[in-house]
Amino acid sequence: MNVIKTEHTYEISSYYLWTDNTTVLQWIRSHSDRHPTFIANRIAEIQDNSDPSEWRHVPGRQNVADDGSRGLQLANLDPECRWLNGPAFLTLPEEFWPVDIAVPQEVSLATEVTSSPGVNDVSKDSLHE
Image (cartoon, rainbow, N blue to C red; front, side, top):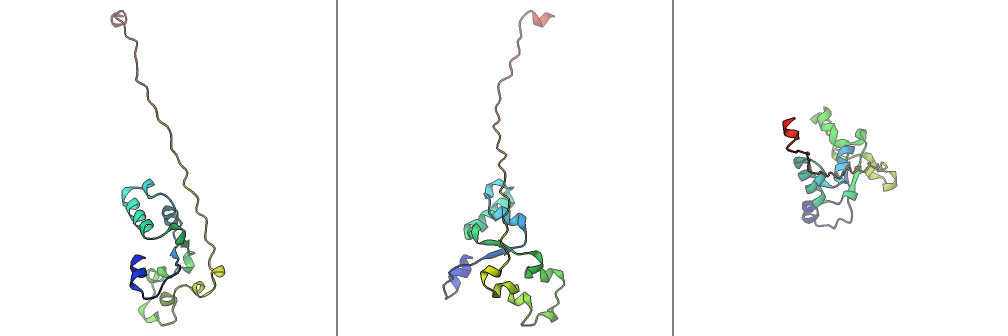
């Protein structure tokens, strides 16, 4: 997002980022250090370059990014196709956009682990029994 912000000559007052993957949305809205290293690094990069509150869920059928992987032919890329224009709801006022989903918060499974040294009662008499 930083490149987009700095390379345009007009000021961007707000923006939204979209994903159709609720798992990814949950990851973005959580602490990146809770994930395996590869995922944590990607999530940290996303969080460094955007605010988690800017991310929204787009229902799969409205996600134009999937069109290319679902057989959209080059011949069908006319100026009016949704691949070039984005989902139709983006031309409407925000109140008509898909409702943002509430992703469940991760449950902390922090458990205190304590140990005590194992002590065996060993006496001279018990060694000869």
